[in-house]
Image 1 (cartoon, rainbow, N blue to C red):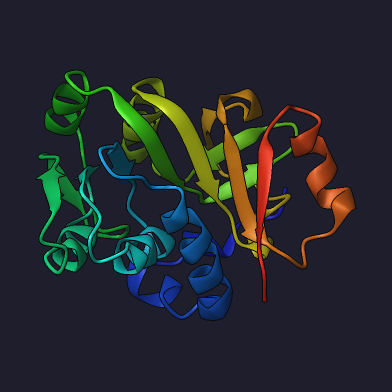
Image 2: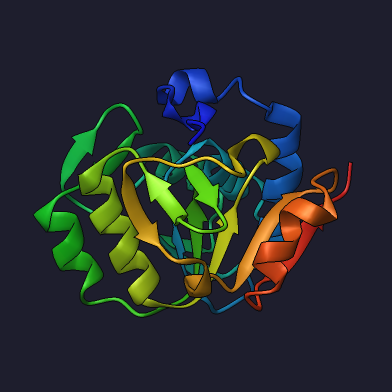
Amino acid sequence: MPRSPASANYASRQHQAPAAKRRIAQVAAGLIQDGQIVILDGGTTNLLVAQYLRANLQATVITNSPPVVMALMEHPNVEVILLGGRLFKHSMVTTGAAALDMLRMIHADLYMLGVNSLHPEIGISDLNIEETYVKRMMIENAAEVAALVSAEKFGTAAPYVVCPLNALTYLITENNVSDEIIAPYTEQGITVLRAEA
């Protein structure tokens, strides 16, 4: 299986497909409504989601990403909850028992899932087992799950499976991803949202 370019460290990923990530983030930010409790995963695309939230949004955001927390400092009506745990510096997220323990107490309306790899048969997978556990619990504790996927991540796989496709509510991707690539996801009943160029 091809390996996702998302295997690079956080700083390097900020320079991968920046325009596409911005468009995906804008669509994702539009899903978040007043009064919602939202889990915002780590990753460079989710950092952009935080930056694109409308200024007057009133919501609660739970995240394991210190960069997301810093971005949300600019949103006065967004309550921010940072999950504790050990900082996994490669991805700039907290992981481990403390993060999982906090997540057990949460039921969110929406989870914005940062995706390392996406494959129609394998589902969503990740490179770090500790991060995988956190993502799994975020999925379990959210009513809806939106996967944010830039084009280069389709058809790739990583060692640790996060979830099968049927765990997803939305798949947000680029407009130039072909219908052939998207078909296995729509066949699973996932709502595919395409970010216009």
